[in-house]
Length: 376
Image (tube, rainbow, N blue to C red; front, side, top):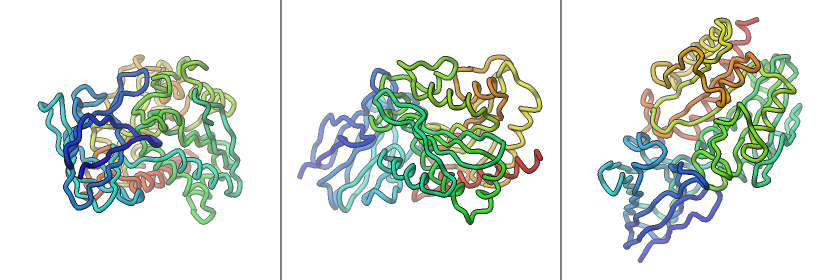
């Protein structure tokens, strides 16, 4: 019996080139009006008890070809638990081929990382908004007319902004947000209680809902990379950034974390704002101290591997972390989680996962509390 492959759903992305029994040759569709491609998400039916061989070709031309060696695809048969399955990469085969092998017991969903659907996003926003002391507002609309949701709470003077999924294919970022909101709205959690006393939080769980639904890796509805729009966002290219930045101007920003995923580096790390024109040592020391606290608090975070630091005066101010550090004097940072595994603590069953993303969020916020207490 020939298998059936479909991706006509929220965040779905795959093109079927051929099917022969339980073997299929596939390709990833590019982001709309863009050459970026790497995210995939599709379902296979009709292969119960047979080994699937799924070949995704042409990946040497993908956005980050260095992300494929050592990578294992995620799979779920109940759409709740996402594990890893047998995966190999051959750079010399058909322009770079990822081969996924799996023997399902029923319909099986495969993805680049565990998806975070727009429906789950709506549930997260609705449930959080019902918590005591939380207010919800729509900062603006995406190009496809979807709301840019913001959840706000806390009574403290420190203005903290947490925002995620500028790059929609980095779905681990919204799993992180779910963990962060769980802690911050739990009346029994001591870190949440203490942080609400010291800070006012502004949380944007998904800055790019259009790209998320369309199955994009990196861009919005018109192929724009939102994390290159912060110097001059516009209503016709990047209204998602424009509305968030306008809200930030109203509140000010003392601390900001932009949550992402990295395709190639099998570690959790932070990127800072070292090259901004207005760099000062006190601001830089604040960032380094937060990073040291987080490294001490969780073995899932490290400082050995990451992006190179920008030379003085060379920071790209179109990126949010640099723009917020320069504009507001904020201690701003970009958190990166892996699509692969965390090589410091590998997990054969799941690699890096939604569960670990949520737990990392709790450690990030506990580190923020310690950081604030030390600052006085």
